[in-house]
Image 1 (cartoon, rainbow, N blue to C red):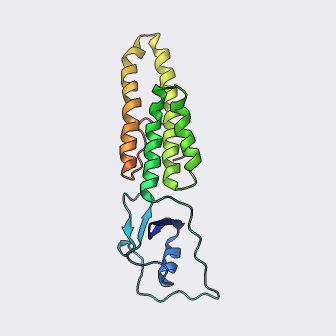
Image 2 (cartoon, rainbow, N blue to C red):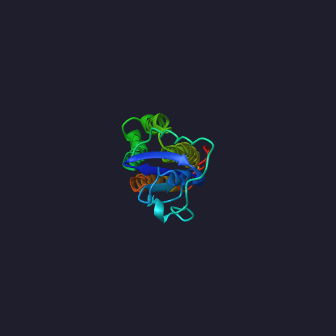
Image 3 (cartoon, rainbow, N blue to C red):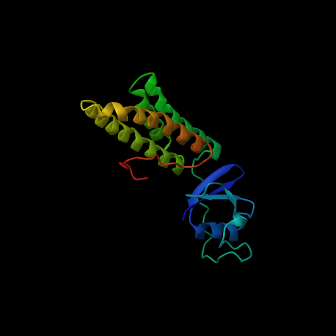
Length: 187
């Protein structure tokens, strides 16, 4: 499991449990520092992470290991905001058809290296864009048999509701995979 460490508002990582324990032993990480791992809904103090020892002496090395330089990441509120905009930018399709497909992917591609959550949310949204296009084509074909007219309102509703739910969850720091999503990009 990889951890992200937050000290004084600066997010760093990913680090392994061993690296975090080394930082603790060297006095570079403290019980009040916050840590997050994929799948967690919130940041926790290091003191609440099971298996980390704050009492042991620092590990012995021939030469002291260097602390990896922090990644250029955004504070969690900035990450959440970018993810919210990725979800909501799908609605630009109401202004210009292609913008609803291009803008979320553009935001994802420009920001995916700053935090793994942005990359994961971007993959989910890209999967949904492709999936919804496929479903739209199927519904159009089904309209020739009148069945599409029955299915189209439900698909249109999903194409409005899913990005809103995704944006609300992203604002809380949660990752939500759209139902009925076909995974073209590994999530």
